[in-house]
Image 1 (cartoon, rainbow, N blue to C red):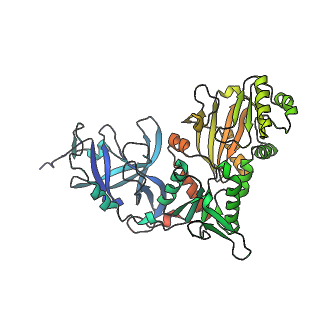
Image 2: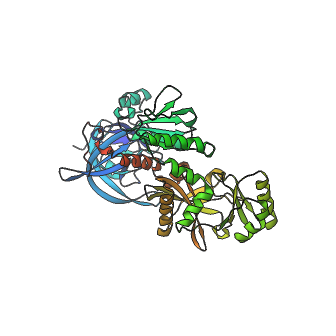
Image 3: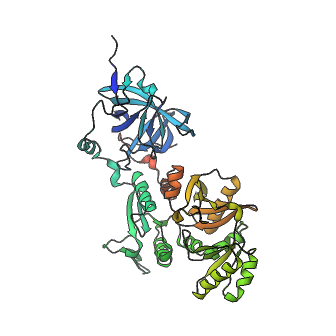
Length: 472
């Protein structure tokens, strides 16, 4: 007797009981060969000599919570080409699919689908002989009430956090970068706190030094802090970070490293001293030396930079010598400290941002200035795209971060006829542009850096089925 086939629409609710995923909305696509599940923090390990994989998933569309931790035996690793033409080697697992009252095993590839419309793709191999698709319909097998979803995910054990106690030292809790860091830490099971720098104060005492928060908390029991200090708060933010360090709290970027990276002149001097290529730059204290400064950098056009500027603000392109003199003297009359720098015409308004964590480039983008603009910063209307950087550019970025003592750095490089040149090293690099363009979990990599410093192993956290993973 032939088994009756399920009639399904272009999207349906299903579940994976073996993974602890009680409900996930799937895109049913007979044009795709393999099925795919959204996964992140993917780690392989051995169990009784067999290869296994642990991972986490956001089962609900457009939400980073809840997050479910899963494990399965690793079946294979395969090169998969996406609809956009990109190829990626993905882990493959085999697990039970439950849909419309029927259950059978299917193969799933694992990859980060955060930027995709659906967290689950059901391909034709999984449907073969079991389903008929009516692409004009949706939820032929029934919709999922919100109350049912809340019931399924109400007991998500790890959202409260049983891992490290991590504070994000910043000013704006609604900023994308700060939100992503908070989410990434929570997803990995840590107890995250947003700490407004302005609401922290310090007790200096040889016997009981403390950091207090305005709500009455004493913050000495934190395991780590992630300083995200805006330029206007550099002095107090670094003093606060330094006090945390003095009481034994790990700082992802240390106060000394942040201080010297914020001083554009000092940082360029350090980079130059260590043999790293930078654009020819000039600095003087008196307007009397304006003409000499312009000559130093090869004349007009030239760049004038305020030492305290950030995100492209306080940076001016002077296209003529006269304009350069006017801008420099105007800044000097305001008693502002500035750098004069050669203009790299061949860069055509483009630069590179390389994100370095623990001595490794984890993501790279090319930033391109908006029409009529020369600054490539995203905050100045620039656009970001994925770029393949050279080994020399990677070495330059890694060494720049190391010279300045930064565990996390956004290193800006410009391509010139003389080769790659270092523009700037940012100690609180933004995440939105680079995560959106590369689809990489850069915030998660920052949290992993803290875990390594504390020798904390995420694979030892409880999994959704109550067992413990044993890492490689």
